[in-house]
Length: 443
Image (cartoon, rainbow, N blue to C red; front, side, top):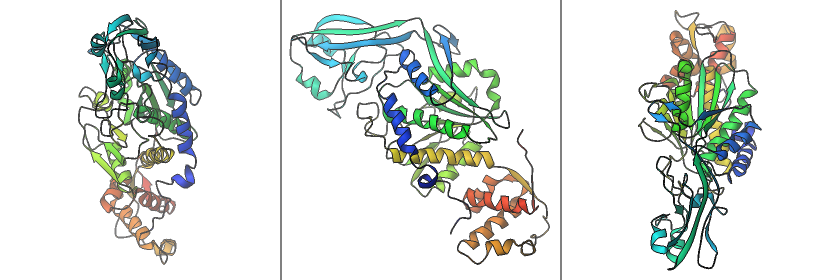
């Protein structure tokens, strides 16, 4: 049946070219070596600040944040392994994945046997370089393809990691868009990964364009875009902003949004919050394959926002979840993996969720005793006779029947089985004819 309202996902008309622009920003951010602290994060945030209004915060090393402590800051200038001929056979300048992230500084000459104790490969994908970290233990290492490891010969190797690990700061950025009410929607991305495109440059770049789009709109809610290092960043932000967390009414962690997989939504800890309902309804009516998964205390930073001491209404929107695509945390998570079309689709789905949350209201039927006479108001002429008329009529009747002050528009869509757009359109028409009164007024 034809809907009376424009489709929620109208990438071709409303978002022409947006996928390419998001991909261009991914490409610009791709070469930067990021970690949970350091200049790579700051450089990334400075680039984002060219696109959106971004307030940057610096939290000193040693700051206690609940059960954690902000660690030393890590920076790296160069790293390599040279063979006996002086040739760089492993070179940080070619790929920042070659160095185990957070490696302590090293200068040494080692035998092959000694060197192998610090080498990491992914034998199941012998041509790819894996991504490894040593955030909370002082260690060092190199990553390389398994085929390259097999080619190493006996002899002495020169090892250099020109890095620093010393007191500094943890950096994060926030973009705040003020709406009609102080109630907030939190949108979060982690910014601690080096040259990995789907996880998580796709979401960082997408969030920037989402903030740009919303900055041009009149908003019901206020929106807070948070770009912070995974785990320690969100925990730090929660500790420093604990007094204002009651303002967060909806939240969405964005991750892995540029690959070819179907869209996946992971519910909040409660599982039945308005963001859970909006995301589920959007995917059910998107016309595309999708998956809804229940909350688990494993994954991205939704597990921090949903920890029992906060239990915030925060879900996670992905395409293929982390760890479930073969390129995950390897050099194959590159610019070829993320595609403009998939980025545009993910962008449109984020907007569709926001559109639902922004417009979802409760109404009261002003003529609740029997059906209002729609014909004398000219409404049957506007809804009858043409293609899709039956759905439009049903949408109006469902809204009138459930507009009792207890059901919001999303609940009416869920119960009727109709798309939210059709229900919202019906409510707008009925309100224009004084058949509905809004029960909730923002602000």
